[in-house]
Length: 263
Picture (spheres, rainbow, N blue to C red):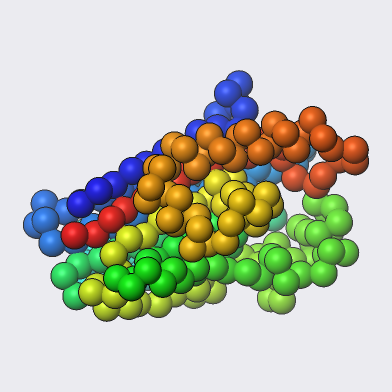
């Protein structure tokens, strides 16, 4: 089995808010991938004493452990339990009802000898390649389907669409959000490779147009995860130099990629 994991901060002077893990159970018959992209809050309060990296480390650690230790539990239940465990760690000190309480996007893939299960919540991506080379992108595209007016300012986002019906959902403090995730399963024999990418790495496709998702997974298989992140950084720098008007969003975002080739 080939596995690669790369996670880099967008700014070397700021902590990386992503979380990425690969778990290979001692049985040798399966494994799991967990990738979280912490949501950077705007200036101002979040109602929480803790940082986004604290939250993603807690949630990611719980999610990785539970994904492996509860192999028969659906991934929605696993995520729900991980959110609950994380919320309990700071509910006495923090206002978890605040719309900007620490939160993250989530990708989980888990496989055994028979099945590959997956869960995607918000705008990170999971790619699956079949033996015949067909690539399926598993995406939660609710953010991309929202009208631009709904995303015009942080205040509008928080009051109208963040973790609200008709908007989009992230993993924060409410375990019920797990039921909002995109989930599914495919026969193990129909997956030869998979990749999980935070949106900072997925820019290779959806911001800079270096290729489609099939091209992206082919690039990962040939050049590796570090090469994809390096290319995104080159494109970000070129975009920054050529930019006439500011683009909404970070110039350089945290970027994480986990690539796995299954035997």
